[in-house]
Length: 143
Ligand SMILES: CC(C)(COP(=O)(O)OP(=O)(O)OC[C@H]1O[C@@H](n2cnc3c(N)ncnc32)[C@H](O)[C@@H]1OP(=O)(O)O)[C@@H](O)C(=O)NCCC(=O)NCCS
Image 1 (cartoon, rainbow, N blue to C red):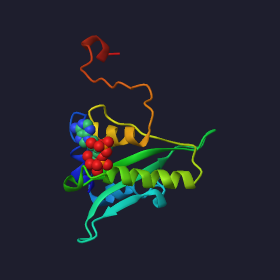
Image 2 (image 1 turned 90 degrees about the horizontal axis):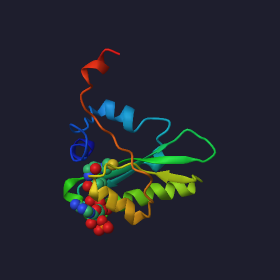
Image 3 (image 1 turned 180 degrees about the vertical axis):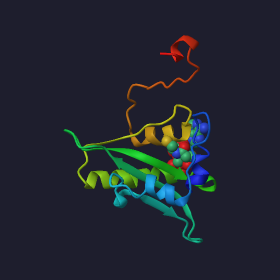
C-alpha cells in the first residue's frame, strides 16, 4: 500500500522511498510513539486486499497531549469514495477516546485531495511553513 501511495504524494524533488517491508515496519509501524490501536487498515471484503491505512504519531508530552496524523494512504482504484475521510475519522475517534487534546496534520500545498479531506474534517489552517531549496553561494560554502 505504501509503495503505491508514497509514489503519489506531491511535493519534494523525488518520490518518498518506502523502503522494504522491514524498514517500513520499523519506521512507520513498530514505534512506541505510533499507537497500534490507532493504526487503521481498510481491507477490501471480497478479496482481503489492503486498500488503505491511516496512523497517528504521538508527540512528546507537554502541557497538552497531542498527536500528528501520520500517513494516510488509499489504493488508487479506491480513491474518491470517502475512504481516506473514513480512515482519518477512525483515528480521530481513537484520539478522543484516549483523551488527547488535539490532532494536527501537515500537508503539502499541492496535495489537494488530502487538504480537501482535512478541510471537510474541520481542521483549521495554521500559518504556512515554506521550505526552499537551492544552491549555496560560492562564498557561503566555505564558512
Ligand atoms: C490523499 C488520499 C489519501 C485521499 O484518499 P481518498 O480515499 O481518495 O479521499 P476521500 O475520497 O476521502 O476524499 C477525497 C477528497 O478530495 C477531493 N479531491 C480529489 N481530487 C481533488 C483535486 N484535484 N482538487 C481538489 N479536491 C480534490 C474530493 O472531492 C474529496 O473531497 P470531498 O469529500 O469534500 O468531495 C489519496 O489520494 C492518496 O492515497 N494519495 C497518496 C498518498 C498521500 O498523498 N497521502 C497524504 C500524505 S500527507
